[in-house]
Image 1 (cartoon, rainbow, N blue to C red):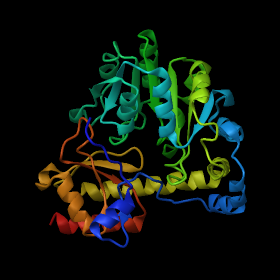
Image 2 (cartoon, rainbow, N blue to C red; image 1 turned 30 degrees about the vertical axis):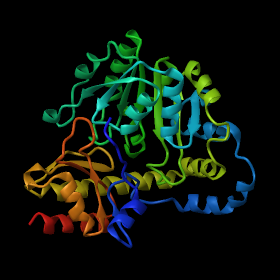
Image 3 (spheres, one colour; image 1 turned 90 degrees about the horizontal axis):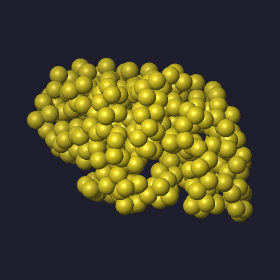
Image 4 (cartoon, rainbow, N blue to C red; image 1 turned 180 degrees about the horizontal axis):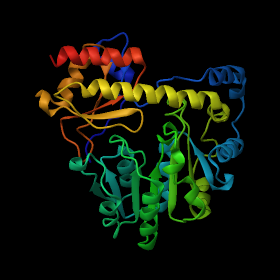
Length: 358
């Protein structure tokens, strides 16, 4: 497996480049920022850190169930969604894993850590990475587990719930467990048309992964959850650390899920900036810009006669960090990803690109 580095490692970048500050377009975090209600709750509950957090975060599970319309007894909370991904692979120990690619690197890392062989089914670049579901379904046979992002990172591919159910049902008929990563689903205003969370009540082979750090801007606190059938959920609870989610993360999660004003304003603000940055990037003749569905934009820069690493290096001279996507299976050295930031920051990116590509 290729060495894979995530975006958002700002301290490392700043030290390497001798920078005092940086605008981070490499990590896909809500540009609306941290809710003031969460800030206040963390300060108000700071003394809670002298006590153990609630084991299994049952109160938070109840709040998640209420917010997403699923049963609390189908939910497990994690120290970030990635923790649950690794625990799942540890208990299932799949022999053959199928990954819809390009996709989030931790699917492969978690599966390999549990001894799985890795197979890929590629989203077609010729089809703007919007491959028909039938092209994915035919590859399921012979695999024990399948990983798919919806919306998918880094392509932004978004499948309807009807298409996803076809995939899940076909997988069930072929003895394949399905992991659907909905970590960016909260950015979608009409998420009910795409989310398979309600289907955990119907299918025993479904595991829905959900991050709370992306939409609520909490990556440094770490918080996520998964929903699945009790036959999988019970072993997950047995395998995890009983205090895996710290007290402040639990408080932040409960406050976040209650903050409907923040949720509404975030979706409106982010959608405005997604559209703005996409339209601005489209003005560059040398860029092939893939239409975004959520808060990041995939771009092919081959016509610039620069590689992704070269553009990344040039943008660092402007104090801007981006994601070089060449180490995603299915992409090459000409792909980059831009997170969507604030208007001022988005303009700084556009201004820098204008100078670099002149």
